[in-house]
Length: 386
Ligand SMILES: Cc1ncc(COP(=O)(O)O)c(C=O)c1O
Image 1: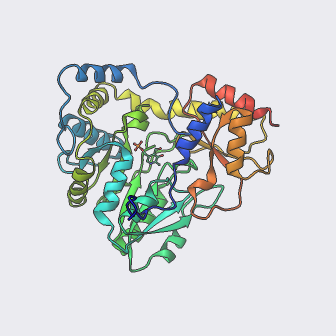
Image 2: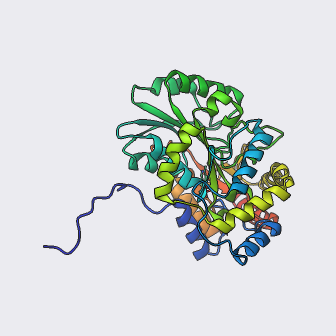
Image 3: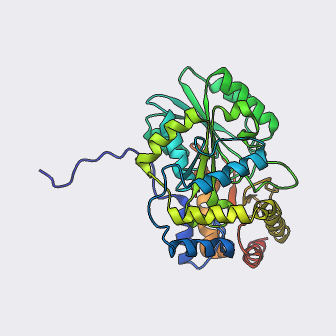
């Protein structure tokens, strides 16, 4: 008998995420890291100071399952303020260890073996594995370049009696596209007609540019009534390493969500929640300033890249910018990011990793949630390529 236990992988095709790989490669080669989506600046001092205070003043034990009441109240007030959607902070909000855990719990609350879940490529990497681990069948539809918009006719054609859920992401990582009101109307019509549940990944809700509003599913009461809307404090407050987020859903969906959440994470770190509640209450201006803050960075990066051979359509949202590089290189995108990191000194993410079947195109994703000097230095290197 071998001493090695038999173990068939449930996710045999899944390796280390490209985000980890590229950040490591950037560190190894001392490249400027425009790959993984995290800032190279800190969260607001008024926020990190509150965390220090709470950890040293006895707020270090388990929080309630759904999150501490002041944070849920701050979330409910924010949802009312931005989306004119009144929610009950006790039954419709759960604070989670990041949006990733919320997505996992929402999928597992709903999806049963054989259920089909529609998602759109390029797709954020945790959706497909979450569905498969639940026994579901991911159905990948395509967002066509360069606009990366949902083809709602294709969605209608993909619906079968087994379709149970649609996962949307707006503002969209990696393309930077956003859903508009017409998209929400189409989503609502299809979801109601086929009794589907929606996961709306809105972690970049406050990063929408050029004066456009963010079309949250929470703006449409009938859509909100069948949606898990998922958000990330990490993205919004420049503290991705805090891994805190939340889910907003109607009570009937939230009850099932909590049944899963209590056995996946149970609760979210207590002092982080108190710090976030204080900061949200005392600094509402932070959220108002975010679109301008990031739009300026996007525009700085685009201006600095204007002399390069990369072709860029301004990102409408998120802190990501796609770049088409066929005028610069004939390498495929995996080799391109390796070359950029090792030889040019700038790390990026290859677009093909976001696809089940990558199309023949040459795009990389740059992240612009970086100090201005970091963006300028990266652009200078990339411009040297001609
Ligand atoms: C589209 C999208 N969804 C979810 C997440 C995960 O957010 P969190 O770090 O809060 O788990 C990310 C992080 O990059 C993301 O880009």
